[in-house]
Length: 242
Image (cartoon, rainbow, N blue to C red; front, top):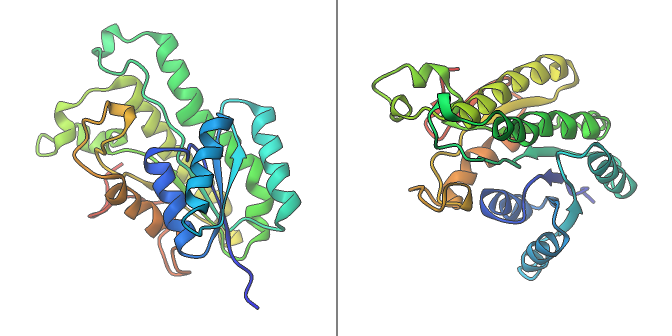
């Protein structure tokens, strides 16, 4: 009997994260739906289980060391390994003002979730990931993290200047490469995904892409074959410039 694979998705009670959890579960994964709010997390997991999917709420606040450590203990108590980790949780706090007017406190709060959160979570779940045969880690980034696109007048990102949010995703891209370099000898692939401008509450549902479209690149990177890329940064169309 083939053992089912397992996955943890952070920030998965709504939006892109919930769709990622749903897609992985439809592929046969046991999915731990990470969410910091019990009521929302439980409701999201129950809705997916009602579809016949193996999804369980996992209490997980990526900004709190003990919450992350406790979540790793919960998963390790039920599974000897973890095949997929999707660091999806993210925020965009008061991101509209020009750089000269952005509040440092807002940028710090953004970094705590978007940058330090994935570091905390990846480090905590690393023993379980190493125990899996060829685990995959996906960092949910953004095209706004691309310095190359920001400087290219031929791309949509050239007209966008979100210092706090954008630079947090640039930092996340660097973190992706750092983990990928360290973990490659263990057969673990670590890549960053840019889902595109998606209609979620992060942007007041102004995005033009659906969560189904946004999840596609994440799922592709989460289920890479052994000959798939490592330490890359991708959207639906392929590699993005750093």
